Structure formats: structure tokens, C-alpha cells
Image (tube, rainbow, N blue to C red):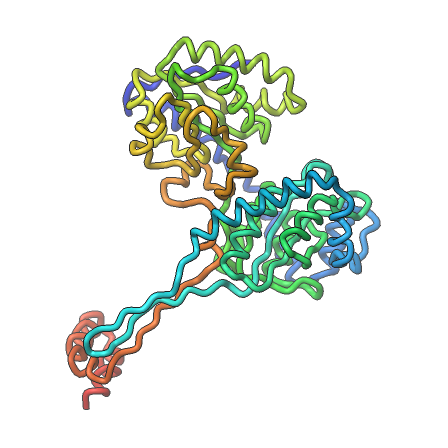
Length: 434
């Protein structure tokens, strides 16, 4: 299983690395037209279109009456999975909720000496739609996706949350998804997948009320649908394939680094796993471990293809140069597998989530620690952030001018309006000073 070997001595070497990674962004333009038609069909025909798509792709016997999962089935799912799993889910939800509670913003106000009040009012959106992929035939339920998307919306105070997920071939939903929804207190769950589910959440149908913000991962059809709906609804982000960058020194354990690279490679053939290190012996040891460990994985073929196309071990002259490359890579996940990761943290400018030291592998953040695992990819961490409470809030400016405010500042405001050629703006202010 080959893994690309590269060197980075200075920024002059970045062009070759960037050119290679840019190819991961190759859009499939055929999908655009397909998704556009799906969105239009669902917008026009509602439940009827949802049922047709679901019969064609998920469950041949699906009926429109089955779109919404009965509340009793959601509750009953708590009895269908082991109690020890319930406890793990409860603890994960608690940890994620505790972290996101720290993100809550408050409305604020300032009062000038003349009595003018200015401020910002923070309010949650009215309704959110969450998409949860079905996993492999509905047998690998992505419970962490539901938790990571639902909790920040709940902390924001969103009063109405809808969840969609594709049914299995027998028309049911995996009990782990239902049980997780029950633990989260969610009772509005619909059986719909792919781009037609996204269309239903955005436009609404006879059964599903329209939403203001959509969130949740999915395949290229889901991602394309969300991107085409920007401007009609808010979305979390248009995420690409997963990625990890690791900056490691000689204190790192090769077997651990290989395992961490493979934890991303098994996601998708387009996932990128990149090790950056000044230690050539460590690099060689990790390369050998990748071969050994990959062969033992159930998803070996996916991981091997990912490493062959988008995996790399890049040697650098020192950790400072390595940090420069890390900032250029701007990866979704970054592990600082260093003897003293805190001394390097100040040098990191671009990373979606940063995992510190040898005992913080990326899956700790994916499932349990508390920070959100919905992260920007494809170098967009240069200007965007993890999913948070703020994604489900909006802010309104409040202006309450005192009686003397326009008298004092009206002429200045009118002058600025006339500079822009907006005479009516100027007169609107001047009317108050007559």
C-alpha cells in the first residue's frame, strides 16, 4: 500500500503540495443538474415526490403515511438497545451539551449620556432541520451526527427541530437513531434521505414544515442540495471529505500515528491523512505500521485507496517549518503529537479542531469530549469555524435614539447621505429638525 512521500523545506515547496490537494475539490457538475431537478420536484409535488424517491432508492413498499415516525416508536427504541449503550449515549450528550453551553451569547445594551440606547438582540431561529445519514444500509447509525447537530440547536433555544434520515429497506429506522432522538427529547423524525430530504426541510411538504436552518452531513447529493439552497435557508457548511494532519516529533509512537491516519482514511477514498515530521526514522516506522494496520481493517480497501491517493508523509527540517506547513494545509483535524504540544499551540493559526499530545486521538473529539465534530474541510478553516450555537442564532441591532440625538447629529447624517446621492435619506433626518 503506497503512501506518498514528500518534503517541505520552505514555502517554495508549497505549490507542489497544494496542486496535489486541490484535485480533491474536483466538482461533479453532473450532480448539480440532478439535484436541481430533485429540489424543483419536491418543491412542486411535496409528499408525493418524497414517496416516489424513497420507493426508488430506499424502500420499494414505502407509503406516504409512513413519512413521520410515530412518537411511540421513538420512545420504544430506548428498550431496543442495550442499557450500557444508553448510558454511553447519555454521557456523550451531556458532555457535548456542557461544552456548547459555554458558547451562548447574550443580548447587550449600551446607553449614551443623552439617553440613546444601542444594542444587539440575540435570538434563536424558529425552526431547524437536521439530516442524519443512514450509514451502510442503515446498519451503521451515525448517532454522533445527530448529537453534534441537535445539541447546539437546543442550547441556542431553537423551539422546533425536525430530523430526517433515510429508511432501511424494510421501511424502518435504526433503533439507535430513534433512541438517541428520544434521549435528546426530539419527537419530529421523518423517513427521507438524500437531496429530496433536504428539499423537504427547506421548502416544506404536506407533512414536513419548512425550516430556517439546515445542518447535518451527507453524500455529494446532500452537500450539493444544501449549497443550492444557500440564500433560501441557512446551512451549517458545505463540507468536503474528511482530513487529518499530524505534526509529530520523536516522542510519538509510530503505531499510534498510523492508527490515527487510518481513522480518517477509512471514511472515504477522498479522505486525506497527512503526517508532518522532522524525524525520518519515525516517518519510516509509521509507513510500515500503515501497511500492517490497514490489512487488518474491515474497511481496508477504502483506507488503502485513500492513503494511496491522498495520504502523505512529509518530512520537514524542524518543527517550526512543520508548523508553517500545518497552517498552509489548514486541515479539518490537527493532532500535535509532540512532547510539548502547548509550546507549539501559539504557532497554529488554521485548524478546525486541535488535539493536544499523545493521548488525544481524533476520535475522542468525534464522539465524546464535547467540542463539535462538524468542522470545515478543504482549507476553509482559514475563514470558518466548527458548528456552534451561533449557527442557530441570529442577531438584530437595536437603535433607540434620544430626542436630542437627531438634533445634534442630523446635519452630519444628512451630509453623508448626500455624498452617496441619497437625497430622501437626508430629508428623512432633516424632517425631524424642522
